[in-house]
Length: 306
Image 1 (spheres, helix red, strand yellow):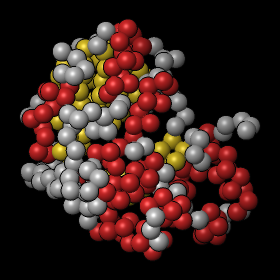
Image 2 (cartoon, rainbow, N blue to C red):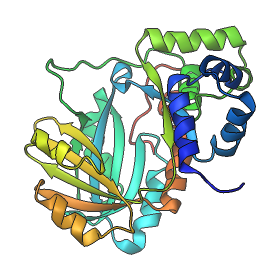
Image 3 (tube, one colour):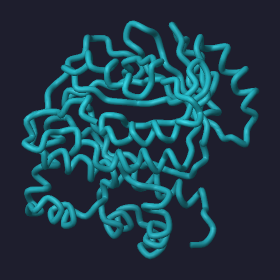
Image 4 (cartoon, helix red, strand yellow):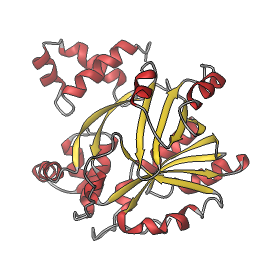
């Protein structure tokens, strides 16, 4: 395949951010770029180091987001992770060690099944804690959650667009046994309902293979500015505080990171992004919506079924 060039990946990511679904010829013509150069870069990196993924407002379809931390013995990490990643409501599972030694997870729960979370997590561990998480900064007005009101075919479509939004319409139509105009109508309907909010490039260069997760009862704006040199994400935990996550490489000084970040949070752990866990997570994510939704499209399956 040749040398992987970061500047070419960044060039492609920037272009596809502007034109996520357009053809390469249209992008080249609009930007005044040599088509064959663009196609060479696209063929080299797209689908391997970069993909365009649909972004959804899951609140519109009645799903709530949570982060959880489970105590799991080291020798059982993979066994438990395999079981957890058979549950489509669990988005990501990664090894983590700190205030809980075991697994760190992101999961989604239908609004009317929140009371079942303890029973679901108890299948995997007898020691866990979890928090509902919203985007930061928190909204000024109380949030409202919708319901799943679409057919099962829409769940399949959402999975396809989430995995690779540049999947040809013809291939999607064949997958769903529908015409191309029908697929376009379905995509537009997701947009009109404000479920489909856009498309974003997802770059996977394995640059960050570690993360520091911290929980704090308060957050100061200067914290985000303080760590501009790092990739950092912030979340709001309603009624509990805030979540901060720093991403870095295992080649960096982990002890130094822990000391540096611990000054800003009250609870802290280290998260490991291992290839074997990524494979499990990707396999689960690829068909998550279609397995969450009942085949008759009448609503969500129970989070306890899996």
